[in-house]
Amino acid sequence: MTASSAPAPIRVDIVSDVVCPWCAIGYRQLATAAEAEGIALDIHWHPFELNPTMPPEGEGLRDHLMRKYGISKAESDKNRERITAIGAELGFPFVFADDMRMGNTFLAHQLIAWAEPKGRAHAAKQALLTAHFTEGRDVSDIAVLAEVAESIGLDATEAREVLLSGVLADRVREKELTWTSQGVSGVPTMVFAEKYIGNGAMGVETYKEVLRKVTEDA
Image (cartoon, rainbow, N blue to C red; front, top):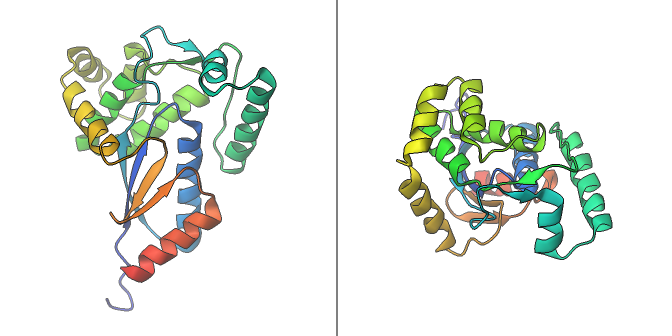
């Protein structure tokens, strides 16, 4: 490597769901750490469904979380306050509302898979996180997903046709199985340079340490 050449970007595979607040937080903590360290990232998103058996009509978000994790409304409120505060520090606005719903995300992952060969998977992922957490939109709705596609410069009609056809369903299922068969049971799960694994939103300082280690070992 010459003095003027920059190191190659670090590959980071991120297994996550578009309705996972800690996935939004973890990525932004990672991006903040990378910027502070002057390290470029090569991000690859992979699908994971937090609620694969969620029916098409979805469920009220608060009721869903209280039932799934056995928490009270007071605990739910406290969690929302914490997530909102952390998101604000990272420049990501979480806007929780009483009528917010948890939906099935299988179609959302198909949208990301469709956007990937077009070089828009990352943009799709970020737009879906914003649609769900900031705008309170239903990311299981094909009309919403088509609008998300259009918002990142892709063709809404083509997106709708792809999602209605289910042509990418098997591909997404295979990708999900690839990770769950390796023991991934929670998100975000991040794999750095295909050898270092991190679970959860680890914080900016921890991500800095991981990135420095990967760079030193390269």
